[in-house]
Length: 371
Ligand code: GDP
Ligand code: MN
Image (cartoon, rainbow, N blue to C red; front, side, top):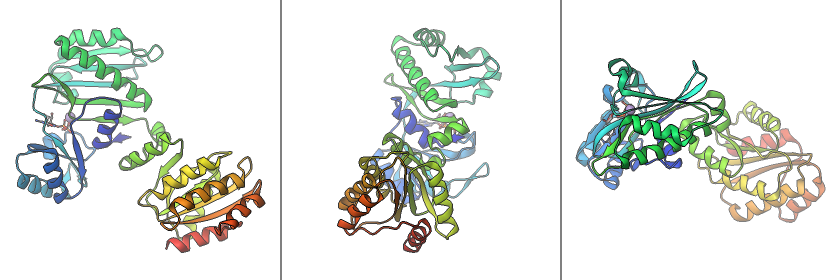
């Protein structure tokens, strides 16, 4: 699965690789506002996944706010190689004197990772490997030993870079390699990796392809929502964002899936998959509810717990804490049965929080409330 550029930029940035300042916009007015903040000239970049975007007219430098408005109106809604443009990046236009190429790929022929780099960046690597094969430096990395200092030193030496640039490049290669392994990438490519007039290396493009199975685990289901999913991951939550409005949170993946199916069957639209896992503490329940209640697309939260190792009183404590903090803002429908059910119900009753014990009734109530 290919990750859209702005998500790719975020991954690069998280990994510590320099990127331009940028905003993501979906209307011309937004592009004007973004250009005001970022400063002129700015670069407008169509967020499409097809290759050769620049050459197909999807990357434009604008000098004035009027330009920003007209170029944005022209790009948004247009098609680039058959793909509709729904979003644009507005980025600071980085003045640079050189464009390098840098990527890491899985080399299936040698069962290794392969770092590719060149001083002749900006053009497609396929093109480069045909027209100037000698200008493309290849350094294989054995996945069992991983990236070593000598790999990056060799790469920098072969590129014949100045000491200052070589140091930066080595650092960027290490960071890109970390990102590449962490996200199980098939490809992590920066083209161009620009050398600015004052001697800084900065990534002006991000092409990242994540292994499909890893993408699912990592929550890249929708590239645009990867932000929320990686945020959830940091909280230790097993979360997949969906495009409905009912926040489904349960204990155990099986129950979560069954609950999503039921909501769907009853005519509702699940807005996420959130699995608390087994034996969730009150703190974990609270964290999950807080996270969901703060997601703008979630209208109502449906908490469905079947306590085994999970204790209903712990769950109830977590619900109470979330109620205290978010009380009126969004509705929470609770279904609670299982271990320490009576204690759990008493806690909810003492706070006048309603609950269900039958899953079907609870789901019906959730769908009705969200309609
Ligand atoms: P691609 O065609 O999808 O690979 O699009 P890129 O993001 O690589 O952009 C194509 C070309 O636009 C690059 O090779 C650069 O020469 C140029 N470009 C991209 N970003 C900037 C920028 O911030 N400043 C300047 N001056 N040029 C840029
Ligand atoms: Mn590029």
